Length: 226
Image (cartoon, rainbow, N blue to C red; front, side, top):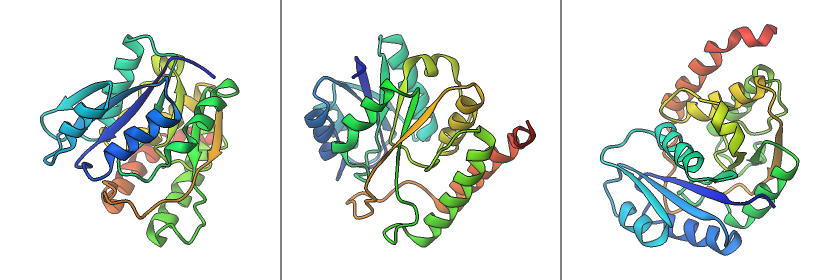
């Protein structure tokens, strides 16, 4: 398995769930360095991150998941990581799957934890939006992506040195797939369970986030014909 790995945990108002996430990562990936990013939380998230993580980046005001990931990626590049694993702080990603996702980097440049989007456990509005955006992202990126909106990902550090996505929130992750796919990087996927009973609600805002993702897809529309 590739080492060293920096596990990035972007968090916003997730004090009810983030401690279990960090402890789960440390249990299943004991050699990973856990980097928490507090995105201007107004609850006790920052205190939890400082108590449980190996390193913490803290923003005074909320800037968005894209900004949090951009800062964390740069930290990993600057501090000698061979790869990063990103996992959400809201408890919707099972840390026990982390070793499988990281291990798949032996075969791929980028590995995405993919949910069974057709599952009844996925709210219907999320199911439709994800299936549509994944289908379009797959065509534009030229890669067999199964779940374009999943934030459970492992990425080789050489990819992060080259790929610089735009966006400040969830659209950042879609832009990353499109840019990386068209740059020739390889994608793999690992099945992950669908979890929507977390004590921390997702910060994904269906209308706003879907609109921002749609803008990214529209910006790259010319790639459909290449």
